[in-house]
Image 1 (cartoon, one colour):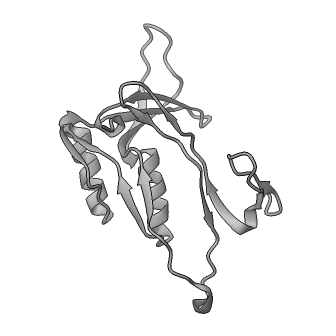
Image 2: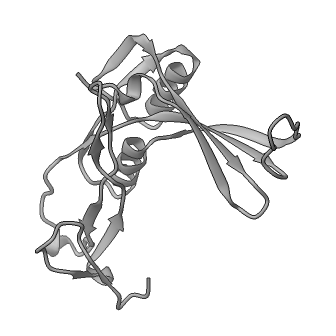
Length: 173
């Protein structure tokens, strides 16, 4: 968006704000059956002046959602049924909507609490290790449930296709 563009808030009746007044990070929010919370939300953070006399204390933000292992697989093209394709490269990184928002808040030094269940297994261990390496944590460990992951297939054009394996990070009771 150009700097002068207006950004509308998702709720009806709220005024529009200008892009120069905030940073916007959008996701959706919905509740699914079986106590599984699938969240996406819009986080609008007002721009903060770095002038000492203008800085005021910020309230802590509660970030609720998932932290998962993202398995990024680069390939020439997606396979058709019964077709084999060679993987050009693959990597694993920390992802998930709640982690992404909390990490952005961490970079802007905005106080937050990450409330993202972390399960067990290779993906749960990876998530916990990566959170710890960043000085982050979540108060919820779910050792009886494996953590899920997201497989992200990336084609040379940049087009992405996802396969998700939901685990402990999507279960809130």
